[in-house]
Image (tube, rainbow, N blue to C red; front, top):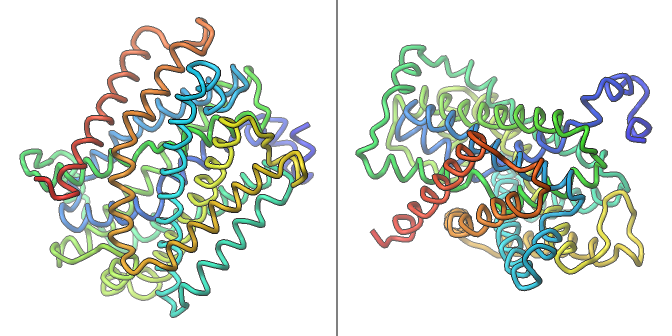
Length: 418
């Protein structure tokens, strides 16, 4: 059934197994490296050089263990995250999860639309043009009547982030500097720890969990596909952190080496600073393409996750494989409303930098709820043979608790309490 949705030349790859089962992990991980994350990576490279490389590597298993649980939950139970919370813990807890998701998805969309606006301004295009065009594009994607098509488009947008890898080679980083930074972490410096916490606190968002659990269902993956879905998730986790490391290293080798105190809080500031060393192609074109791709794939994932999750909690029919109809009207209306509200808020905002900071704080505050539900469902909703055991269980719990701790650590300093 799945192979029929792919062009003829690709069907042999579908039969081989990769295109039929891969995709949900890649797209959600590429979305994790969104516009806000890229700005954080650039700040890390400018202020601390290559000393942020090792923390980015450590985040690979954190990403994997969280999203791997969603794969098993979705494939085995055939229920989305919101629906599963409602079935396991009741309607009130499901409403709490829905509120968490809505806040996170809207926050993500604000950040992504701000990123789109920033890229447009690099080339002299007003946000009054770029944000509505991006909104229309994202709304039209949902009307294709095919989850597989939306997934492929999302991956295509996300792969534009590989432009940052090209930028690394253009920046000519010194091997010795990267190696020294990899093993040198000033853990006694509060400003360094704050940036580490900012990276960790944004590594797992509610919309990522809702999306992948809903996506494996819409993609109709079976229990037999779990092994390949895990591989897909693992490759995605590595790829997204390669992109983050590329941004850190490229900025460290240029801005961080010559102007470590430079202000890098917006897309325009980062691009202007990089252009001094990488030229127009590296500083504007490559950087702009990478940020635009990251913002668009994250916008797709966050908005779909929001619409799927709310539909699951309230029992509405929801699937991208069904075109808009009376049955799916509430799902598509929710998807559209999320985009329109997000676009309107960005166009009305006068301080997009503060907006992005607020979103990071929000994600940190939501981490205990998000990961708490995920761990509880894994232990309760899955049949015993599909639950974690032994070392796998202890490592997963340890990493999730560490993420919660770092996320909460970020909040007081960010809002000025300390």
